[in-house]
Length: 289
Image (cartoon, rainbow, N blue to C red; front, side, top):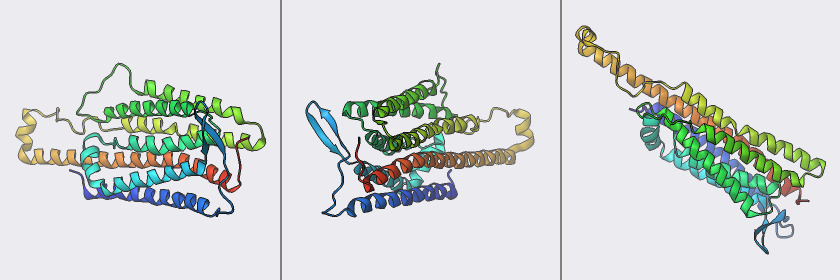
């Protein structure tokens, strides 16, 4: 059912993001390696794991993990593009594994943001990640509206819970981050990260647009045929209708892949901003005041 053009389109998109993550991964590695033995990385601050147990925080390692994970996920998507398009996009017009990618890659960027702003307890970071995972779980359920062959009609749509959860998560991060805003540099840093954090809310808008403008009966049975049509059209008419439906499905798959690319771009902007901040504070030997 899936044309080679759709599979190639999906693979090309993911190879492009492999290249993006590779560039930033190299930038992180060069930042670490350029320090040398006589100029080691500056300790940014220490985080409390449990009472009396502290670990050193070097945000550059978090940024390195972010882009290594992104490279691996997009590499797997590119290599298994045929299976993903045939098994997921062909039936639900979306890639559910994307939410796993978003949790790992965007989630690690969130950890980097929280470390930049000096979250002093691991419990606080874990709480934010749990809220983030819950939000993405609701987004996964929201995707079920895309499957026209599966009646999904809950009393409350998943976004009713996902959006407030995500906004609450943002305000938790903002509240904790405000504890270390005490000079002009930290104010500028807070503004940039805050704007970037709110920018990630675009994922809800993308999902709603994708669902709202889907084809209504792209995979269901034809309900508008009757006996007279069959008598007039015959076998040729049935073949033409079947061909039209196949074209609709292929178009919907292509549209789903386009939205997939927009999700990637939305996450990329957030990851890029956090990595740029982390590389900057690492190269200038900044510490948390």
